[in-house]
Length: 156
Image (cartoon, rainbow, N blue to C red; front, side):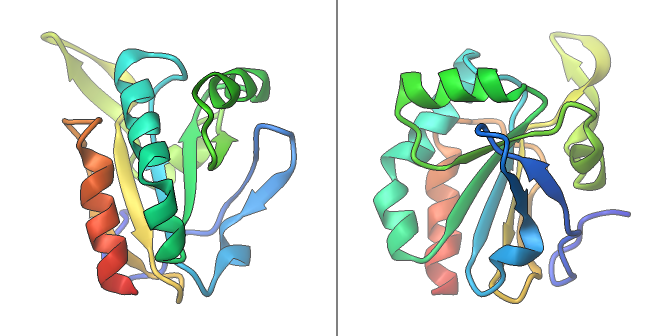
């Protein structure tokens, strides 16, 4: 099942950094930014997370919730969140089930080598639970959150 704009976002429930389950369908009524990233504390992932942190107030003003999803476990997310003062929710998907459904797990080409991995991508879900925008392969991790903010603000 491919993620398509204008269609319902597949529901999921994953544990956050504190072990509490977060279910997408329970967030209806507000925009939800779901961004998939490979690994806590890697350069690109840190830049992206910090960029979302830096525009946090604007995202919240627009009514958005931000969910970062990676295969990392809760303790890794706790350290990452604390070290970089991340105000949003980080979810663990160690089996890559949600990532697979959302097209964020698949074949990658890194420095000429092909292999399976997390595809940095973002999905913006509107308040009705529909996919409003899907950024399939994010190249500039540090700049990307500003594009997401623009899309969220247009929803408001």
